Image 1: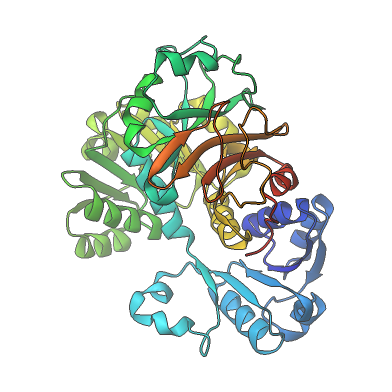
Image 2 (image 1 turned 135 degrees about the vertical axis):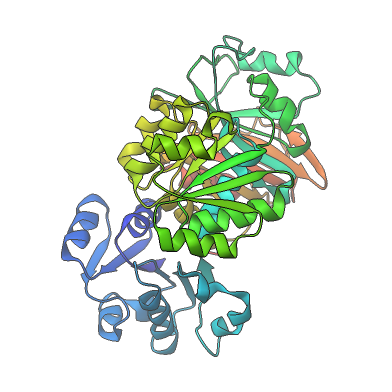
Amino acid sequence: MKIVICGAGLVGAGIATYLAEEHNDVTVVDASAEKIQRVTDQVDVHGVVGTASYPDILSEAGARDADLLIAVTESDEINMVACQVAHTIFNTPVKIARIRHQPYLDPIYGDLYSPDQLPIDHIISPEAEVSAAVGNQIRVPGAFDVKDMCGGRMNLVGVQCTEESPILDTPIRHLTNLFPDLSMTILAIIRDGKLILPRDGAEMMAAGDRVYFVCDASHLSRAMATFAHEEPEARSVIIAGGGAIGQMLAARIEANFQNTKVQIIEKDPARARALAENMHGTSVLNGDALDSGIMSEAGVHSTETFVSVTDDDEVNILSALLAKRNGATHAVALVNTPGFIPLVSALGVDAVINPSQITVSSILEHVRRGKIRDVHPVVEDLGEVIEAEALPSSLLVGKSLREAKIPKGVAIGGIMRGDEVIPARGDTVIEAGDTVAIFAARGRIPLVEKLLSVRLDFF
């Protein structure tokens, strides 16, 4: 398939990498020759230097023959105009745009994006996606990654093993006997930056491992307890950074978390004043999140969750570490720079939120084809978890997982059949119409295509 990506920043380069690995014909457009050089040196894609909304530049990029245009430049306006030009001049079938400025996304202006106005098929809002991800962290503070699947009936959870975890040094196949009524499947283990997929159940988890599991949503608390993570939903939250993400997160907590006290620390006086006037149940402090006096005034020593979402990675990491040092139970830091992500957990920060990875995930949800319902990249881009419907033609259907010859780099996590969540075991048989959670290591998507008997490129 032919894809044009407008924007060669972190998100554009990230989505180009994923799609090129799946043997799509990808062209990346950016006004920066340096960014184009970087992405074409690293990924097997074509590059065009120029403003992505100009018709001649899109023509050079091959928009006339493209099946999909993804606009993720730093400018909302360029993204919107690029979609308009692709639709009007080149008749590009599917257009996806990243839009960050919240007034553009106000529901009262929803008619703006109709086919007769701005023909954008799917809009991605990083701020909304990030605030939702942080909201999950607050709901399950013991996890470093949480994703609702199957309409919220199944959870994908990433959790770090501690010395107190009761299941350490126990072969994974024995967990079923230890917890016979627990609907949970260990999907992947990340140890020292390397991926381990349990194959025969002989693998054992060790302290420091980061583990992804899939469970019935109603069993989440019990599943977390097996890892010695029984932290309750946060009742006190401090947010460092009152930008769009911080404000949206506070509003989300106000709406969805009753009896949770929220405070925002915002450095800019004018912004702090505006927040104080617009927020209803949230307190606002004007100050620097790296100032121990301000942190003390906010009550960081007794807060359950500290979330740092300023526009500065260093401030986010350092303030999260400062919060932990001063007594915060759980600390979450927003980190944009990919190179920082593997280091942050080792420093003591409980969870890292990466906007670029979340945005790539949102785009992939719209790009995948056929019966693919959701896509979620795991930490450090080591793979992705796919929620897919099993078609009658799938190689998985009608035989036990033990007999299905699941290739290396691929693992089945859980099955949703009707209203029932079924953990993946060796004798589990997948039926046509089941929704299946599948982990695919980086570069293994073609193997999943073969298993599902459906291409994953486009809907």
